[in-house]
Each structure stands twice: as C-alpha cells, then as structure tokens.
Image 1 (cartoon, rainbow, N blue to C red):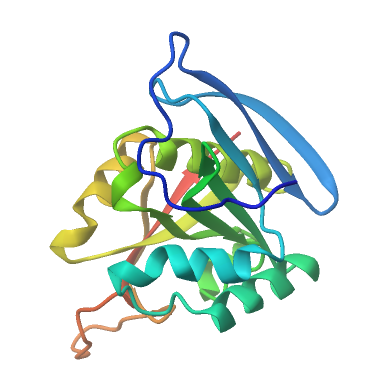
Image 2 (cartoon, rainbow, N blue to C red):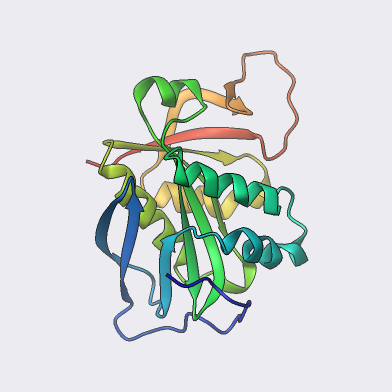
Length: 209
C-alpha cells in the first residue's frame, strides 16, 4: 500500500466507463463494492497508513484549514489501529485528493444509543473537486458501515460553505434525525446561544439496508 505523493492537480481524468472498485477495510475485513464515480479514473481509496500523518497536513497547509495538523492525523491513525475509527484516503494518480472517516461509536448521544456509526471529516481538496471523489469516499464509508449497521449517520455544518455537502447528502437520501441541531455533539436546547461555526451541525441519518 503506497502513500499519496505530491499534489498534482491534473489527476483523475475522465474515463470511458467511469467505474472503479472501491475497497473499504474495517476491523481486519475487506469489503469490496463497485461504485459509479462520475467518470473518474485513476483513483485509489485505501485505509490510512503511517506516512499519511505527514503528507496529508502538508497537502492542507496552503489552504490554512484549522485542525489539519500532524498531531490530529497521528490521533486518527491511532484510533484506526485500535478500532475506534476507520480512515479512508483518496489518491488520484498518486496525489492526495481527499478523505473521510467513520467513527464506529459516535460521541453524539442519539447515534451512540442507537448504535449508529458516524461519518466524519469528509474533505476533498479544491483542485480535485467535481470529479466524483466525495461520492466515491461516501460509497466506501457506507459500505464499511453496512457490514455492521443498517443506518449511517453524519453531521453537516449550517453556514453557506456547507451548501455542496448539504446537496450531496440530500441526493444520497440523508434526512434529519429529528433531534434538531447539535453543538460539539450535544443537542442544542431551545433558547440556547451557540456560535455558528464548524461545530454547529444538523445531524442526519440514512438507512443502508
């Protein structure tokens, strides 16, 4: 399993078939599922490996997105190794393109109480967007979840930058879980004052089987 190298924005050119095989590994077992990926070729989806703890923060550094630190990715790798989380990495022609994680036991109480794994941290670098990579990552995450649970959950932010994510999740059939909004994984009660930032989310679920 090789690391992504560099940030070549020319990767993932359209193919004639637009079909790739997505493999999500979880708990030592591999689950393979063909996924239509919007005419994307030369994409590799794989679990996180140690080299990613250095290369992924380097890829995010020019964007100055908060929280994309070496320490954060070392923690993700540790959680993958201990079975807390599955981290999936997308590479295009050898370049890091995006990521998604599945936290098997959500810290959000309504998901945790129902045994619903939570999809988190779905990100695609701007240079690789509109090539079906987010869809491929979601396909892989949902395939991994379906081996353990009949429902997937996630939270989506509530300001304008999250509009593409809202549309993606709605197209995939995600619906509000009926608990309203949450801040840092805790349901917001009526009358509360919270900051509108990345931690304010609407929690969604989708039946997978």
